[in-house]
Length: 292
Ligand SMILES: Nc1ncnc2c1ncn2[C@@H]1O[C@H](COP(=O)(O)OP(=O)(O)OP(=O)(O)O)[C@@H](O)[C@H]1O
Ligand SMILES: [Mg+2]
Image (cartoon, rainbow, N blue to C red; front, side, top):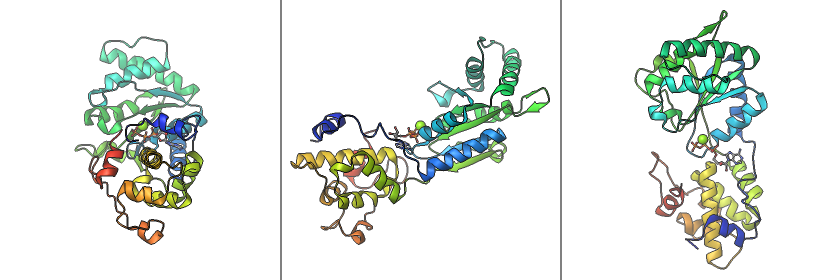
């Protein structure tokens, strides 16, 4: 079953659609993001949301902004490391007006000031930058200055939401910007949230004991990791001719060192540590998590 695709596997287990795509759960982290983004917009602040790959940052921010009905500017450029402030200026001009960004830096800055000034009188303007941890320090510092543009006596004309897998301000020379930025670190899913997520997605093919075993794995605290882990467990059960995932599958797949994984005490001994990005515990878990 190792080479069966996720969709094929779900089909074999009688799912009519990808169960992970259809759900949107409120979690401790997503609620915090909603509250903080809402406060940031009211204060036109700069916030940085930091969490592992797949921890639900983008989804929560998109939902939060949808509820707030703000005017959103998204920087589409994929290579955030090379993104310069001029790229951000262009994105803002394009998203907030029908005008073409001027070529000259000085004229463009004045153009942006006018466009931002006018737009911000109608709606709150929010600049969202994904992969914020890749931004160059120079661009972050220039972003701070861009926020200080003024229009008709008002300054800080827009809100900035940076999303990153590590703190974008953890670079030398960032003290100035760091002081003006609120940073929120995501905590990951709680045991109850993991259980609710499994029940609401692929719960029908997991025994309660298997769910208990999964929810105690530290790696399961992250949506994307959890999805991958659940898919591999389903693959393992199918390979064994079963349509139900049992606690032993969790033990075999993720290398729990005990025979009876249904015992909570044993499950709590599972130590799959995740240090820097790619250093994962057991080879099996590493293989699953590396799929993305
Ligand atoms: N609140 C939620 N409810 C249900 N599923 C979720 C939720 N948040 C995230 N997910 C699932 O987790 C996946 C990853 O979420 P998201 O893209 O928001 O992570 P991210 O933190 O932005 O990751 P990256 O750092 O790679 O950009 C989503 O595609 C979705 O399947
Ligand atoms: Mg994201």
